Image (cartoon, rainbow, N blue to C red):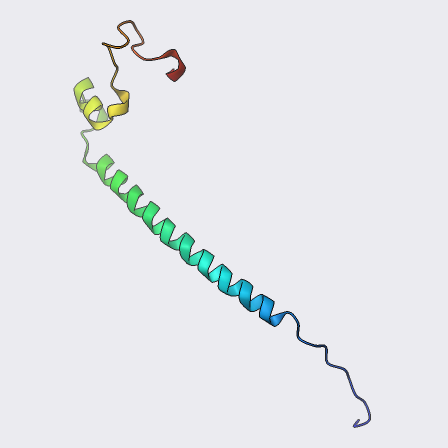
Length: 88
């Protein structure tokens, strides 16, 4: 058995794999931090939704206060639907 010599291939890829791993760890950490920021924003929106008046008890004024984007501009657009046609 001593006479048999098996050639061992040279290791060329370990350094490349380690570099890719470090890059992936950085990318994942960035993704996690951005995800946590998004989760905090979503939790704020959820808390806002939990604290509003139930929709069946809301008046139009309450709706416009809770969701300003729903307010109709009757001065700029005096005729129904009180908003640009592109927004319909």
